[in-house]
Image 1 (cartoon, one colour):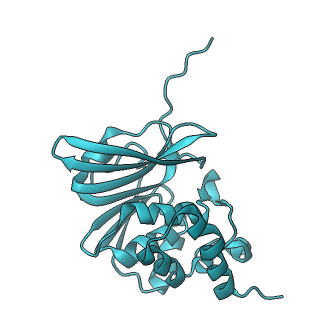
Image 2 (image 1 turned 180 degrees about the vertical axis):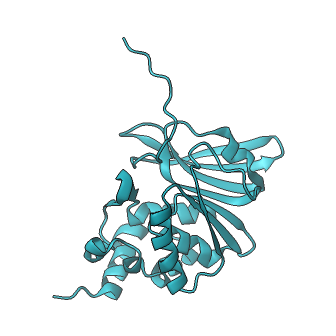
Amino acid sequence: MVLNFEEARHNMIVQQIQPCNVRDDTVLDLLQRVPREDFVPAEYKEHAFTDMKIPLPNGQEMMEPKLEAYMMQALQVQDQDKVLEIGTGTGYVTALLASLARHVVTVDIDEKTQKAAAEKLEAHSMTNVSYEVGDASLGWDKQKPYDVIAITGSLPILPEVFQRNLNVGGRLFAIVGDAPAMEVLLITRVSENEWSHEVLLETDITALINAVEPERFAL
């Protein structure tokens, strides 16, 4: 039996996304328009709308759909925003961001993975994306400042450089801490030297490659 992707997408939104207090019409419409099934690894295509993390190369993983939706609602991406994405992954979150923003700079440590994502994005006419290969686990200074920064893997410690690379009014989405209870943070730059920090919820996802671990004292 061939999966009806349109029906599965609708069910995902109604049964997973909306019950998690994602009610923003712009985000719900975005999830309806951007075909997640085209971005998941081929062997997981039938699970594109399942409430699960999908394994990716190098021990990374694709967020579950409700967390992607929650991120987009929190960031409130506008059509003039310049966005930095840390961790291109499959390109799906890149596609969500690019559908709303003026321009997205996406960084990934794995050139092969990013090239595959870029091919998918180009196939969907996402032309407002530029690609950088490199280790951004400690921050990314190129092309700063940004209106939005989205970090798609977790970080045990959030380097301060990320919030300093925001424009005033800019928003940063980060998942910080250790398993099994990491904090999902929305950080907003309020002024030149002031940031607000809001804990949105708790989750647990794989850390970025080379993410710095805090010093741990052995007993």
